[in-house]
Length: 178
Image (cartoon, one colour):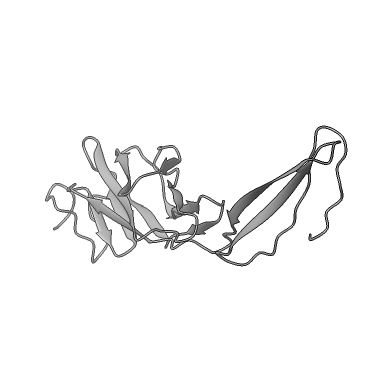
């Protein structure tokens, strides 16, 4: 708005509209006058960020004999004797304009939603034979301007059997054939 209304009483405020140009940096000059007509100016610079983040890639990893990963699917056995760990990592997440605020990991496998604010973006999930979680999930990246983007999806599948389906091989012989 090139000719804003003049505010003559406290508190002094003005709403200013800007064009939404991706990554544009602009300055708004404010002029302040007192009743004696003395004036001063102040410039406020800002950057508009309405671009989507680079969401990155969600990748699972494990060191357990009772967890099997095939592409974007994680299989876990209900035969595990204790607690095993599944780690989710998001790589390649970024935002060139306002910067990445956090990567949000899903609330799955009895673990609460988690926001990681520093790279490497990771979340460990403890799995036991009593977990009963299945379905698709993904992580969300959020930038400092509030824009967010979902990562690729990951599917969690519980195997309720000593013999896993054809093509799935747990690393232990105590859980079906390997």
